[in-house]
Image 1 (cartoon, rainbow, N blue to C red):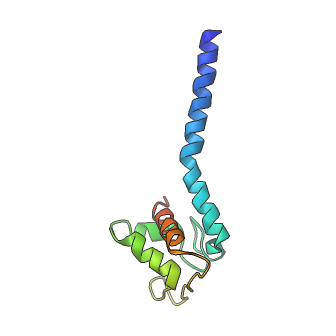
Image 2 (image 1 turned 135 degrees about the vertical axis):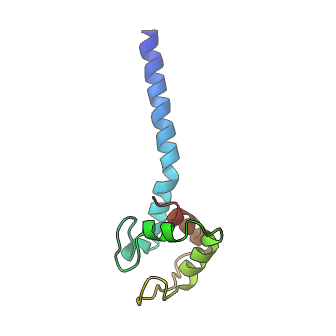
Length: 108
């Protein structure tokens, strides 16, 4: 009985740790969705704009990438991924832009 109880408690703790560690990824996906980023981007495939995995790979060695991408989210940009420009996102503030940029760069 005691070993069964211990196993049950350990299983629940493990599940809680997994859910808590995944929470930031879900929260940032929710932020990206709420700010209409997902209308033009997807994590793993090109839509109107590049896949977030492609962006993460392109900027993987760039130490200033979070700030660069946050600026593009706020102000828009063009020419890096083709002819279609990325419009400025007026729905996003600077803190959200940095959070979204960090999330995009973590895409695997």
